[in-house]
Image (cartoon, rainbow, N blue to C red; front, top):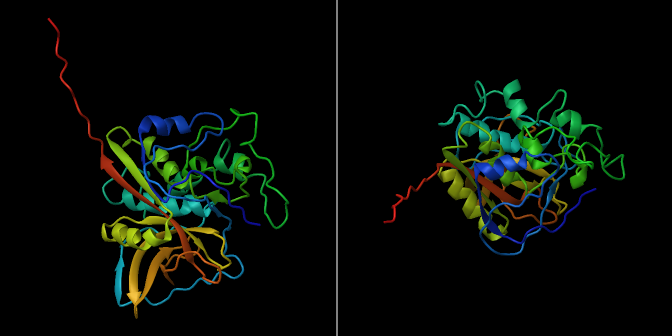
Length: 308
């Protein structure tokens, strides 16, 4: 069972999320995900629907990298952690932790430590897993998501403390089964989570959602060339519906055919796939991309002039 609904209408939108807005997202009750945006064009939201193992029909393989390839080195390969969305975004965060922002994750981020797992999806009492992943529900068994703590009355859930919380992963209020999640909250969630870290006062997390299939290939190459891994929403089985988030880390051309490299949350090695926009019959077609970068906040101080 897969679902898709309309959200804001943007094809490539720049999301600039300030720390104050980020902290507001952690308030009680499920808030609307309404970032500051710029851009125009039609877009539909889309959903990930996969679990900790590849679904039937998903062809997962380590293909030979094309001769003309550009790959970001040392992006950590994390495995599925209560949702492919928080896992794919977690790999991006882990990369930035090892490249200039070492306090994003306590301790080393190249390996999937307990601290890394907690950033992606928290466990324990009053956690993402206990309040939203449970009760475990599956579209193959249950006709609709089983109610979890995201449902009314609002305010009885824990404050958001991980990427999965900010993404609303697994939350039944947002029509998500266990591990499922929507595309539109991914960028705002990454920026919101960043705003709660020690860097949130002096730096901004800037994310860009690209939906237009005519723009994604060029946008992916630009981000990889700049050394910034991205989050991609793809269709692993080629049925024309999105189902999985991955971390995009490279691109190349093989005999004139464009290809992209990703860490797919199921394997510890990069996977190469032919780059195609999402379409029926095309496995691993790409529907959307979320870029993420960190920039210093620019503060402007205007002298106050006393009147006479």
